[in-house]
Length: 316
Length: 295
Image 1 (tube, one colour):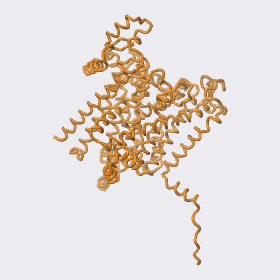
Image 2: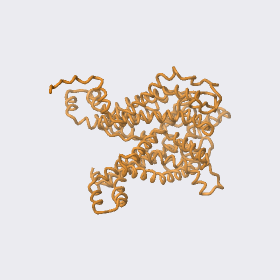
Image 3: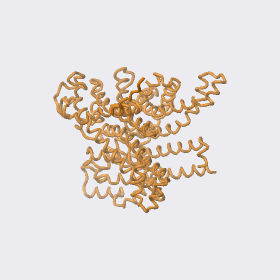
Image 4: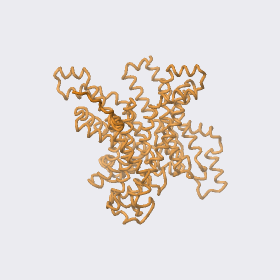
């Protein structure tokens, strides 16, 4: 009962947060200088056409009313029309979101081995050269801006090794394998950035677990070192990193903005940058709301998971 | 045997011992930071060329003794630009983080101490601001500031502060809630001190170590944030020698002269490595744990 109540409270709070985000986004973008109608019409603007368009867009309504209209449409999945191309926002957004989801899944797939392998090596070679070397590598990668990492990977794999195409553009004739190949570098960049955060934590957790009594017990039982590590130590060390993984999902929402731009990947992040440059309000609002939705959702899942996994928190 | 009184250790040795007691990461970080600071302060006086001086060499001629980081498309010496950029990157990062710290600490400490509906309302607002990915929040803030202000260093400082203040406030609030239960805070309240005065005289001094580590941690990522904004074309304007902007400008040249990208990249990454090591060491000295990361 108390768990249900706790989860329900968290969900309600998350919804409230999202409502506030929508308020902030709408009113911050409201104060964007320049009138939307004159921006759409550009040079063709005459006082009459401006007036008609303003009426059509409801620009003479008070801001609160417009917010209500926007929000009620948004909740029902109607994100409005792009100001630049006059296509429906959902139509523009859908393929971009699909591409980014694909990229994120790929990145997560690469993220798991990139996290576990270095952490395991560091933990079993604790305080030896391999551990120190990997510590330095993770620190440097942690300190490297993602756009720089992306650029360096681009340089290494495209220019030096010539393994990958420089631009992740794919045309309809390309096969699934072409897709995968083109997505590898952006996914690898995201995976490395995410893994670096988790590796440091997993290493410390693993070392702590390996020092515990039940691991000594397992060793004394005569289990092989590999079995002790992978069956007894690793699962227990992984639980606390779940939180980091949820945070990484949240990072991903912002991280794709830069990484997609570097690789010209036609995803959700590059759409946001482009629509900000074009001041395409409905598209900006929809993309930011989706980003916030994913972020809040990821944190909610992490909260619920940590409650379910930790009995002490259940009664709190 | 005659016992001889040893002369007291020279004061210099005492400092040396103190220095040896600090964690290694702190020492290495501090040295890297000092190098960057020296570069920032003295750089403009000894940089071989001006930051926008064209025709310093053959464009795209690569790495030479005269141009260690190469020459860019416009014939500008990239090394000089990196040197001239140091004080810009460091000054903007520190002032943005400092502004965020002041706003965040005041909001967080007050909210944690006062509690009640004020705390609840503020927490929801800050939570909403944190829910927008920080780069997205920064981009929206810059876009909504309009074309007149875009590229203005003050806008960049304000945006860094806007991104960091809610996150710092969250830490400060947690610290304030912890401190508020202490007897000396109760005493102050019973003396009839106002919330502001309790915050300034009781909470702030006792939250110093939390705030210090938080400041160092955030300052470490401010160059990355500013660089990302510059990289995406939403930060400072060319020809400002901001490192992220330079990486973006020279990115197309990476096939011909990789050093024009790697040079500014090395400067940016080494600054952040230094700040991170310093933060980690500082946290250890103050007996705190810190999780390095941008999140």
